[in-house]
Image (cartoon, rainbow, N blue to C red; front, side, top):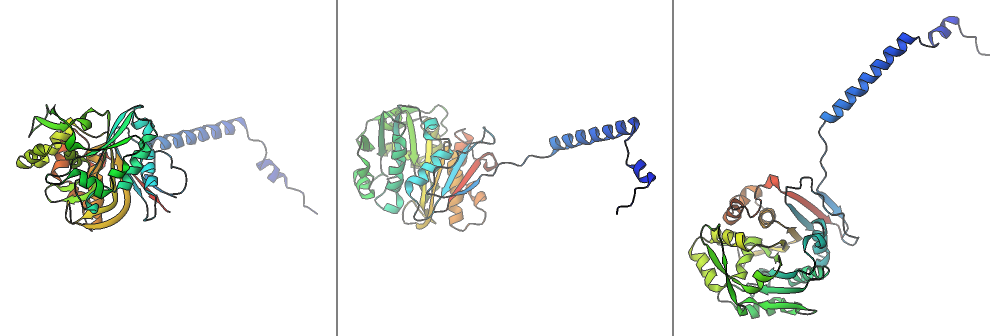
Length: 347
């Protein structure tokens, strides 16, 4: 049987008086206010920018910029069996989707690197085909895939050898730009040149997509989005660029004629030397951005990593044409001011 409670126990746990209640209420309010103040002072955890997902599932959520002033560079890493269309689609989705990138009914110019006969030295036609298929979804008024090969090479032969000519179907034109007329474009802010002769197709389209191969170059360290623009100028202009300051001329050109969208083919990277004869390293990756400088900077970093260079970021700061383009306001070359979205596809 339970023992009866003592009176002293009952009185100690009985109702509190008014003065005690007010004191407790005051103390509790101060505690809540202190917690609220601490919450405002604590740093917020930033969103992660590394996404691991399956290549066979629906597209991932589009990237959301934590700072709208920062350009976004998207890296989509697959494996050897990852479908090329999946790589491209995921990259575009993470940039916000083509519907937001390309205006409806645009006339679109697509510029792969098909400057050589060696297949490793040119953009993989499967990547170019994947980009073209994605572009068709925005119902453009027309799509032209155009290139003029390096001086001394036959562009038509390069288009056929690479497999790029086979993309000419379903309303897509594949064009040897050497057969185009040339128009003179003024470069008001040019430092090495004040005007340049550009092939008409590249200049008159309303939306420009650059699809370079990730690779080394003997004269400019690397060749990617910025240098890929040399394929839209005549052979005489290419010669003039090399006679003057090649790196500054590349920057000058991009200040007047620059891509709207970059999708760098890094399925295989040409390391150590280039633009031909380098050591090919499979990366199974594409790199996409709307900023050609930021795209090249981040892509160059990936190229140097593939070569085993310890301080890859330091190496990127030494690439002249990238830095000169940034100085002209063409894009961002400050790595800390670039938002990188790194997506890994697991299958």
